[in-house]
Structures are given as C-alpha cells and as structure tokens.
Image 1 (cartoon, one colour):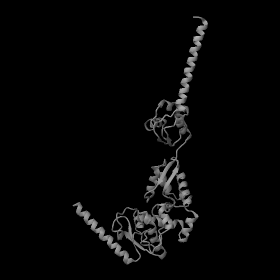
Image 2: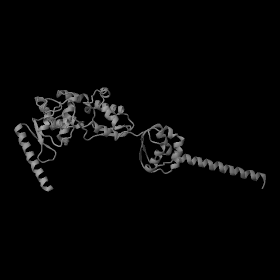
Image 3: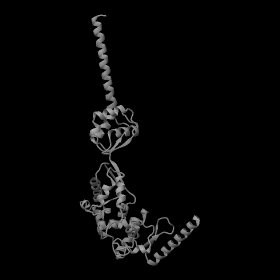
Image 4: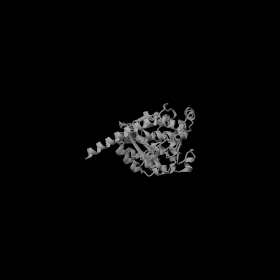
Length: 350
C-alpha cells in the first residue's frame, strides 16, 4: 500500500469520524431544541420546596416524556436545579425540552383561574377557596381578612370586608401573593361601581356599603336568582317605611349559620345584626353576595309587597303579600304543608 493511499484512507476515516460526531451533535441539538418531547398537555406546579428531581419525575409521569435524556441534558444546560422559579406551568405536547427548561428558569407561567363562587358566609370559607386554587396558604389569607391594618389600605375593615369581594373568575398567576390577590379584588370592586351604579344607589338613598348589606340579606333568603329583584323590593319597601327588616338570614348570621331552624327564642339574640330587634340595616354584610344580588338591589322590582314566606310547594320559591293578614294566611298554609310532610316522613321511617 502506497503512502498516498494510506494518507487518503486516514483522511477518509477522519472525515467519517468528524461527520459522525457532527451528526451526533446535530441530532442532539434537534432532539433538544426542535423536536417535541411530550405526548400530553400537563399542568406542572412548582413550589419553593420542589426539587428538580420531582419536576422531572412529574413530567415523565404526567406529560408523557418521550426522551427523558433530552430533558436531563437541557435541565443541566439551563441550570434548572439552581435557577428554577415557583409557578404554574402548562406543558404542551408541542413543547421541546429546551423550551420547558427555559420556562422554569425564566418563570414563564400560565395564568390560573381563581374562581370565587358559591356560598361564602365565613372568612374561613373564603380563605379555603383561595388557598386551594393558589399557592398562598389559608392561614395567610385568614390573617389578612382579620387584619384591620391590612384592610385599611383598601378602605375596608374586618367587619365589612365581605363587601369588597365580588364572586367571579379572576385570571391570576398561581404564585400571586396575598397582597396581589387583594389588589385584584379591590380593582374589580372599583370597576363594578361605575358612575351609573353609584347614581342608582344614590337614587335609593343608599351608599355602596348599604347596597352590599341589603344584597347579602337577599342572597341569604333564596337560591332562586329570578327572585332576587322581588325580594330586594320587599326589603327596600320595609326600609323606606322605617320598619324592622326582620330578616331571618341576619339571625342565622348571629349564630354563625349553625341553626337548623330559626325559632322564636333565637329572635331575642343580643346583636346589632338582629334585624328583629333593631330598625334599619345591620352594620355590615352577612355574607359575600353574588353580583346578581347587588344588581337586584340597584334595580329592584317595583311592587307593594311587604311580606313573604316559603311556598307550600317546597320548590324553593316564596309567596309574597301586601298585608299582614294575607301573609299570615300564606304562612299557615306553609306550616300545614310542613307538618303534613314531616308526618309522612316519620310514618315512612317506621
């Protein structure tokens, strides 16, 4: 074999090695930077105490990682272990390994829906609703709801803070602080109270807080939203006449909503929230009223009804009356129906 041939062979071998190495490097680059590495959409939650190993395991089990080695390479390259930021991250099937690594390092979160809805009659319930959807713990939210100094900055107190919270769906980052959450709630409260709504309240000779108080009573009276304006009209009629509101929900509030049934003895409870004893509105809202209840107070049905009671059909609706005698007739009808139903149930249980 000639020297020239040997040189030629060595050159070809070297070129083949270089080509192979380049192909390998390019293959890794393509695998890490261009090729999708997940089979399912997955929501990844990273807390301050979460380790990079837990993240990798979570991605493999939840997002269906196709090439685990690619994830490990990219995480090393981006120093994810030391630079990872807490957050809620949505991993799409189309995502590459390097994109997910960068997402964690730079904190590219996807907003979380904070849903505040349903019955909210206690601060504990509110704190739990928020903490189960956000990174903040319920104790921190509860402390904020009870802090006069903290709430003063928003123009509210621990007693009337229910008025600031408007049930809705709020898009926020999962890592939002307690301050961030309350800032958003106050922003939405301010947005709700437009000049038009303020004008409606003024026409009723009510301020914003008084509207919220009445709305909370309406909310406590019925689960039928179509009845909100009618019941709001009843309480406004009583309020304008200087009558005691005599609202059962305020008595339930006095007993922390622990009563199965409100009896005459409960109406004697010594509390400024007892509308059977005191004329006018209670000091603050007794729950977080839905926006529909606020709207019902601002746009109540115009009628002459002063009284209402549960319907004898037990369908959750109410019967309304202008006179007390008519109301007593409706109340007796309901009591007879209730007694008959209880007897029937007792007989069936034997």
